[in-house]
Amino acid sequence: MQSSPSISMHNTQPLPPSYTQPATQTAPESLTLAAHSNQPDRAVTRIGVDLNDIGRSIKLLEGAAQQNGVTLNDPSVQVINEDFGHGKMWLATLSFSFKPDRADGTFSPEYLKKVNTANTTFGDWLNVERIKQYGPEE
Image (cartoon, rainbow, N blue to C red):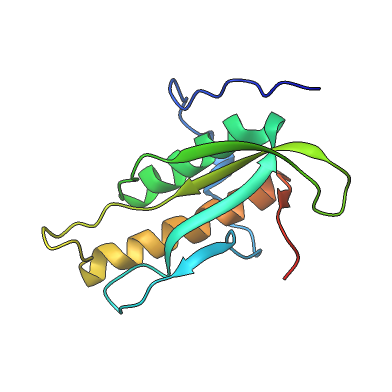
């Protein structure tokens, strides 16, 4: 049985300029949709990627947040051995959300726009980097 490798989310490097060009693909899968208009399009976003791609995926996420001037809550990674139609394989599930800018836990309209843009940017960069996302078929 394969053991799951350890994952580090620190020591990331700045993104090269090539990441500033958006692609036309959609953002990552939504785990839950926000219930209120002063919340992001995705309250929590979850994507599944090959274990070999998790480090790059985290760097892309951090870069998208930084480029758009928003703050991430600590992302979490769960390693699973799952079959989503391609045979059993080790995958890393990356879950993340963004910190609100208001003390009451809501997002100002300007910051909310930046959060939603960061989420879209991240999805675009995953596609540019050809990082395949795995998950159940809807």
